[in-house]
Amino acid sequence: MTEIIDLLLALSQEIKDIKTRIELIRVTRAECLKDTWIDNQDVLQTLHISQRTLQTFRSNGTLPYSKVQGKFYYKVSDIEELLQSNYYNPNFKCDGNISRENILKKTHYGLNIYAYVLRQYYPETTVLSLKGRDCGVTRNPFNSGKSTLQINVVDNKAVHYDMKLTNFKGDVFDFASYHFKLVDEEELLLKINKELHLNLDVKQEDKLSWLDEPDDTWYAYSSFYKAPIRNVFPTQKVRLHQIFERITSDKYKSITEQFRTIKDPKEARKFKANHFDYVTFSGVFSKRNDDSLIEHSSLLTIDFDHLENLEELKQQLLNDEYFETELLFTSPSGEGLKWIIRIDLSKVSHNEYFIAVANYIKHTYNIEVDQSGKDISRACFLSHDPLAFLHKRHQKL
Image (cartoon, rainbow, N blue to C red; front, side, top):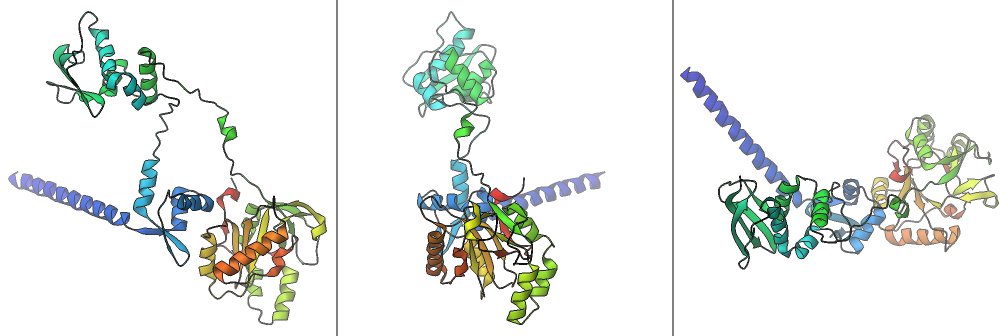
């Protein structure tokens, strides 16, 4: 029997030691992680925000950053601090002037709340005797009415403790919660405001207020054409997620692999023209020419050909400071990229916008882009790319 007891004690100690080591590892890893640097893509995935929002965070100082060779990096500790500073409890929805701070201002640091509650139990007696910031000892209705309740003001807020019940301590809102039997923050503050006639404004929730909020929903439509390229009449109007599904599926896998084995440039051009479906990303057309445009999609296609470091440019484009990527995929040759971005045609034309973007790319990345992108009816062949990128706003629900 003694051996069993000794064994259990030894196991208990080992378990304690293991828990201690695990906690030490957890704390150590957490501390190390705070000093870790992450890039744009990690921040976008962590915060679920757009490139434009992240750019705003950098510009207005919301999120500190470091910039090395055109790429941005952020500290995990700064991300954590941003999240903590914007922490919101969805169970608390009080608006207007109702807040703990305003209630304390209107109730003499909360002393009036204590007095109100105590008077409900002892209406014929003096419940509080204020001396400076100390109210002395009074009866505690939650401890059988014993004179054990000490109330005073600490850091501009009234607090309490019971001299006999060691666990009975807290601030004025805890005390009110005992009395009103309310644990929900919103209900408690509203109740205090009502019962003490504080007349703090209560903002009525407008159930249709969401109609005034910014809407990030945006659908871009393009025309889809079946091969060959000489077919200039579209077969359907498509959205980006439909194009993305075609590119990432196996639909074009076979012809893409076959095309990339062709070495003769002339034969390659002929094969591409005859076998690859294509789209006009910049709009919907009745026929593929600029004069037959029905509706512009607010999309611009930028072609990058014969890239020496395709993956590097791909990451740079996804992290670009000024343009959000709507769709990005590898060209049929496997040596280029198709970059689809959103443009604003309210002030400049499609052609002017293309020239501006081309100059920006030349200045930023030192790369010349295919000038055919300036044509609104520019045909873009669809290839197989299982690693294509699609902005979340276009992803199929």
